Image (tube, rainbow, N blue to C red):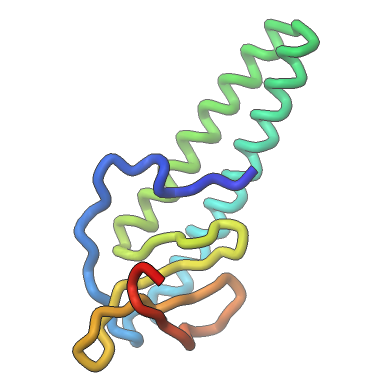
Length: 129
């Protein structure tokens, strides 16, 4: 189960515009945060599954422990998403580790696109694409 980082936002912070150089310089940190988000999402899915299994078996004490772990994992997930938001970029595809950076190219507002594993940003698209 992959989570959407847009589900937890009350109001997204106003986005800064990135230059290509600045966005590329941020990739080591962005990469670590995205990896943390993906790992936390996996823990959320695991605890959710464990809770459902235990609740079905009516193992209430163990289910209570699983729900506490699930709650902590969800909080951690939200904290990592907030870190990414505070940098001014956004997770566009959690599974692929894709991140969008708002930018201006040739006077036109665009979104610089990067995916986990790529050494640098090499493509962009129009916002809302």
